[in-house]
Amino acid sequence: MLIAALFGCPKPTVVPATDTPEYAAVVVAAKDGWEVELRFRDPQTAVLFDTSHGPWRTSWEALGGGRIEAHHGLDLLVLDPPGTSARFRVAMDADASGTPPLVRFSDGSTAFYTGQLALLTVESREAAIALQGDLRGWTGTQPPVEVEVRGAAIIGPDGAAQTVRAVAHQGTGPYVYSGGLRPEAGRLADPGLPDPVAQAFSDDSPGVRRHLESRWGAPIPEPSLWLAWGGPEGDLRNVGRAEGRQIVMSVQGAPYLDPEPDLDPLVWFFAHELTHHHQRLGGVRWPTWMAEGFADLGATEALFALGRYERSDLERRYWSVSRECARLLTGRTLASSRGRVAYVCGDVAGLAVQGLLPDRDLPALWAVLAEDPDQDVTTDDLVAALVARGADPDGAEAVRTFVEGRHEDTDAAIQAVLEAAGREPHYVEGSLSSLAFPFGR
Image (cartoon, rainbow, N blue to C red):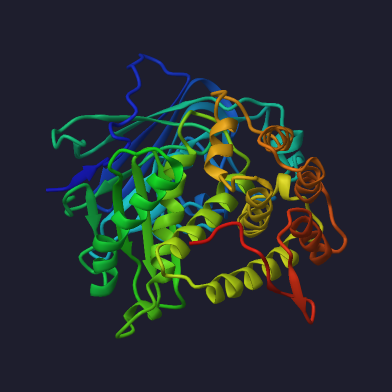
């Protein structure tokens, strides 16, 4: 029997049933994969998807009503003639550089990311193409998309069969799972995981959770953890997403098959995703660089506090982070960046922010910024909160310059923000060698 499951949140986001929702999607868990039908109350000529990270949707098989095109990094659904629905069979080899649209388990079962169905309205195909991939010129809306999962028994957190209705909006939406695996104690573990990985999943994630609860001064509900094994091919690769109570992760790579594998990257991965649980309380919308960069910093601090990292590990990590940030930040601003640059340069900015705080309490600063729900946090908000909590105003302005500026010499920009935060960066042959970290044990 095919089982589809939504574990986490702790309950699915339940949308009141409406006869004709303005924007809706039906996701069907079929024997050979997943099918998606997008439905519209009024005829549409074109709509944009609000997450890209690669044109994986262009590999979906059109089953009627529309086609998907990729233009300058944006995915576009075109309905010609105008229509009220479009149906597709999802390609099972879909891949992306951001949140995985599909997570595959070693037994062939899969989890589907409903957030990939979030939409942006647009006047026409021509207007979408004219954006040239830059949404700063976009003038549409981000409507909630009511998602219903069909085609199988839906197992909710209490184990009872139910229909799942979720919301795909602004790139968010839970994963749903279709297959024969069963959760145990809130965890869905791939039976194909190498033994050391499965053991770390069981033994180390609770310690990470306890540390983060202590650091943030707040408990979080028991998370629903899914861990899939992507296989031994290639280098180590960890991808995942946290939303509500749900954390979905996939790991792969030959290093995990070593007799005594280095599991620090895996535990760091747990810590990064668990940090998002604390960050996302309150409904505030965060810049990508702040959410991801500060989660990277929080994960690194967690491993140091738990004794997995020594100071030498920190120095090696931030040598690498600073080099990657310098390379990726060239020709762009951190404030408007997504992808890998938001992680590594956001991590550098986080070091500076935490270093500027007299109490080094980054979670407390985050809580101040989250006090106004349903807002978009800006760099202005961050700078004001820093100064209000006792940071040096010149140092706070240096963070603004680093985040919002376009830098010709990115190495110099990194050095300047770390020096302004009192991190005492020391360089050897142009590379960051050591600094005063804003945490310790």
